[in-house]
View 1: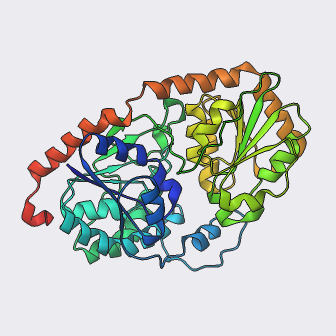
View 2: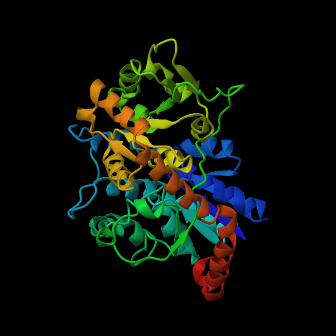
View 3: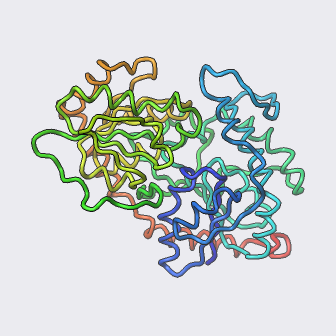
Length: 403
């Protein structure tokens, strides 16, 4: 079986699919990942052959900055009439930049299946053109599967569908691989429609990186808190990078402090107290077994990585999707959330003390961790994908699908 993964050029959108790509390759299947050229190095670093499709003409960073609450838009996006998340028009523009090359590559390589992250609209579009199944792989709680986005998605995708002679495209694909623990699931009333879901264990992949030798030992005298602000926030707006504020607030507590930071964003952290351990580009999943709690920005990958380690978290969301993630995360009982304006030093300290001293938070985090461990690992869903591809092949007219 040949499986083509696709994401637009945002590393954290690609990361959650990497362990599945490894599992498929280990099972003997051919795997490649296609994205805009800007993601090629990230894909190659994950050990998956990279295919560059389209170009990097869409300035996603500038467009996303427009969606930051409280900021006045400075870049022009595609006008839309329907109501819904504004970022949907960005995802359609990114798909438009990738689609021609992605479809052409699909016709040449002849994949049996396309796996895509939820905002990579070019994935299900190409699968529809090629006449093959597509598999959607969310990052965590299913932000994009909400009723409010459906009308707008249909509107912004209409020109692209017309380009390929399609009446429409189902952006939910043939199957959703669902890494989200039950306690974090989106309430059914908010969902766009019922879809077929296959549970899968979220296996953390936080990018390539080196490990310190030796890893810092677990402190027995006092708890250790990991502070991390991911990579997205630092790319968008340095003023939203609150890790320095968090570190300063925690410095007066009797806790060990570890900061996990991308090497290229180390300058945003600035000077830190001597006792603070800064880890540059160390994969987060390798850091957390040595910690007792996490303070972070609310990225889906960070939340799931922390839950996979069974750790309580304080989340200070920065972007709209972070706020959504924080709401779904706190529903688990495994942590707390502070709005950006609430994240003053004393409230940060109070929240972290509560996480460390109140056993209920760690108990809830451990319960979610147990549930995560019970979900089928990526290797155990390979047969599901093989069966889906075989069924798709049996029902596809090769002449129509271009295969």
